[in-house]
Length: 292
Image (cartoon, rainbow, N blue to C red):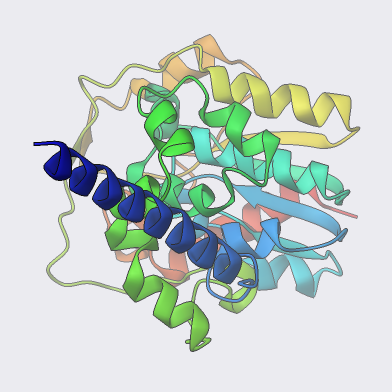
């Protein structure tokens, strides 16, 4: 019995040491990554200057055509992330400020993403390799129910989110396999999709007094960044469009542009403009907010 317990103890110790070694190895690789995604790029970057930084979900990533800002002489980057929530947008801005980014304007897509304060499991996982290196990231995740296991159990976060930051992604980082996420200064164009769903229903969606929207607004105020919050277009065949009126009532400072582009030919799906629609929309935004 004694020998069996000793064997079990040694086995557990070996597994713990292996987990620690793998944790250190994976983390060290991600600390060298800056070309595969927006989160890694910001975390591993130094101070930069931007006239315009765009934040939000896919409705930012696919709607704000960064090259059009650049044609007007504005240095811009679209940090919108498909699937992302305001949880991730707030943390990304915190990291930019921590790295001494000089930002004149933050354009935040704030519409459907106001309806929840949850993190997106897939997008937020890309912050996790840096959980022990960054107090900012640790603090941001500290109220999450799985924080203790992610923070204190070696290698747990890489196993739990293997599909996003596990071996395959690690191998791609080592191989420096390119992605399209950083192309076009972060803007990801969509095109006409004949099979797209051109209907949507926002009837049960309710905007919240959103913690992370408030964080972004406060960060901009504290760092002398002009804050521009914008509701972006939806297709015409959408039920519950009074959602946008509810947003405006809750947050009068958010500019409502949901009806600037309404013809279906400009949409790739009901909630996402195609490239032609995004260019039409972005041109209006530049005209209204960046005349000079």
